[in-house]
Length: 202
Image 1 (cartoon, rainbow, N blue to C red):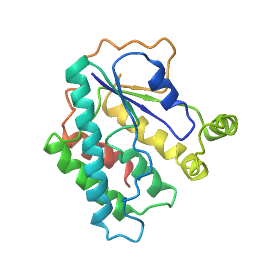
Image 2: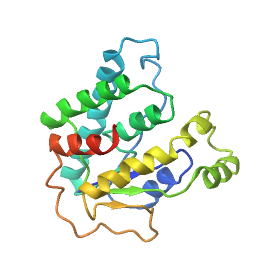
Image 3: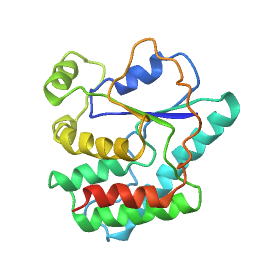
Image 4: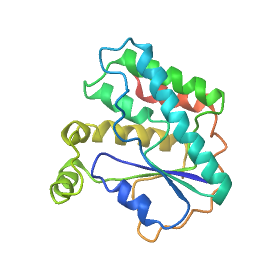
């Protein structure tokens, strides 16, 4: 089983994934100094980030094979992030489409996929800001930019929940145990991605 914890910065997802005490945690990418900047040609960021995201998915598959459970701190597919950037004016439709095309090709090749269950932190920017201000151990330099992504991120996962009933949970529950669910039968279904984008990218 592959599960995902998602949410904005300071939403508690990293603390939650590390607290479960089971499976293998697939950490989110930290700052990557070689990542292409905003001035890069349109296809370059999509190629770069698709490659990084497939690396995380491969780690999740290896953990699932080794111990039955992979816990991803943020979704390896990552398209929720690029969708949200577009929605708040920090990216463009063309940039999102390029990312989506790269992800779709990787899904067809089984190098990226949809997790089995998604746990989405409902912590909103105001509550997250309090946590950020009370946590001196992490700088969170891009917090305010990330906080703006809350509404489109929630919209992304609500739409995905409509398409994957029972696999989206808007909570990071205490006392968590793996749910009694079969592997997502649409793990590598590009039409699921098409349907999701069709609901949102209008």
